[in-house]
Amino acid sequence: MKHLYILFIICISNITQAQFVQDYFINPVKIPLVLSGTFGELRSNHFHSGLDIKTQQKEGLPTHAAAKGYISRIKISNYGYGKALYIQHPNGYTTVYAHLQKFAPKIEEYVKKQQYKKESYTIELFPSSESLQVTQDEIVAYTGNSGGSSGPHLHFEIRNGKQEPMNPMLFGIDIKDTRKPSVNNVWLYPLDDDSHINGQNTPYRLQLLNNNGLITKKVKACGRIGIGINTYDQQDAAYNKNGYYAVSTSLNGTPNFKITMDRFSFSETRYINQLIDFEYFKINSSRITKLFVNHNNPLTVHHLKTDGNGILEINDGFNYNATVNIEDAKGNKTIIEIPMEGKLMPITFKDKQITNSHYYASHDIPFNFSNKYADISFPKGSLYEPEYLCIEELGNRSLSIHENTTPLHKYMHLSFSLDSIANPKKSYIGRFYEKQPKKGIFTGNKIADGRIIAKTRTFGNYGIFEDLDKPKVTPINFSNEKWISSNKTLKVKVTDTTTGIKYYRATINGKFALMSFSPKTGLLVYDFKDSISQSGKNEFKLVVQDHVGNNTIFECVFYRKEKTI
Image 1 (cartoon, rainbow, N blue to C red):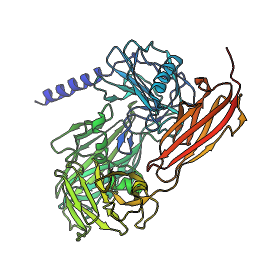
Image 2: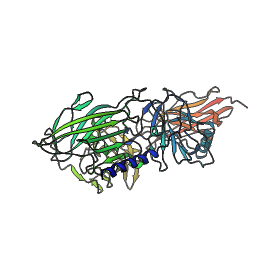
Image 3: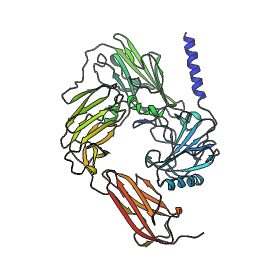
Image 4: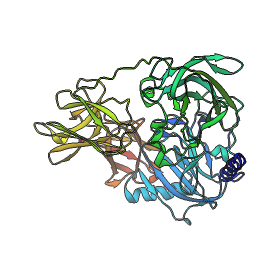
């Protein structure tokens, strides 16, 4: 039976390796590959779905098609991936290139035509297989810093036929790495009321010792125990602290858990909040991976788990040695040993007070709360664990809705009565951090049936706020009644510090003028290559609107001598 089990594992391993074709994809940039982010890295509410390739701190490097195919999707967004290209390949895989500065000329022409047709900078297109075919190594775009990027780089993905992101390093995308993963800290978790570590029923940070490797100081424990690890990996050419590839555990030599970052689906990625110690992350801005599987955790990155789902059963009177094996994608390993003595001890519990402000919420049924002016609801599956939610009135139509140290998987719906609200159309639901009213972080402002409505996936303090301030518009490289013949672009800065920019529309001489927008800088940019302006006098008009409908109309005249061909 043991031999059959080993044969089964080998077969599964061979099937997995076969999914990652070799020598098919080439590097998307012609510089030494250095990463600022690896596949599967733990990010806020999601796993990182590709490689973040450094571009030498600059934009505009040629981006090459990793294999032949056709452009199957183009998306331009102010946030997220910014400017992004998707190439469908004959072998069924898709490669993704994101945070781009601009596309190659034939693609740029195709996109701009559609942007002018729809009169929108943000756009999503699905070209036919014949429209934009590309060959391997063809330049398809130029690297940038668009969307939610925090610095110039290329985000590169490989997806399978189900559009599941897969680890590009397993396809032969080679990154020089001879360094072992590093360990910040190791934790033990008591998983029920009868479990303890050194008599404590709370998460316990282990003391790391040096012993020709890594070993923790021996502890006394008993009951159902889980391991947590805070670790990172660094490649040879970068100081960035990147994510691990695989972590496995064993108890007294018997494997009992493994997590492997080779692929995942976007539908499951938010379950990262059940994989990590979410409360610790919100308090300390540091992520601990839990090396055991809680209920309501369907993550497919859990590759090897016994019936115990990684949970260690520690019994009184026995000695145990748990091992944690951390591995990067190049096979460099770090091993941690955790010696434990099974010892039944008196347990110290952390008191948790339940008051009239606490309302029981289960993870498998919907939750509803109402008072004289507010309603709160969320569907089943919004919580990962049953919870007593602390909901308190703060006055001035504000509510404290539990703590943001508890994760929400699905949206919570909030609504407030608009009775006695002076300016309903200029009001919004906002979140604030302190328990005193101040300018709120915009959450939503839909109005229906005398109520204002918003949705969020963050617990916290919410209330109704008012925004009477119009967006501010500032011309950058031109001024009224001036000649700007030498300008290649028209730049305007727009800001709104209360609810943010929702909409803008520019015209030159009454014709729609396409302006790109960068929320990071607040810059709107028109390219004179679009040839909307004319020689001589031009009338420029820009309408900017915030999220509650405050409008600013900016108008000016500029003069320009257009070049003739």
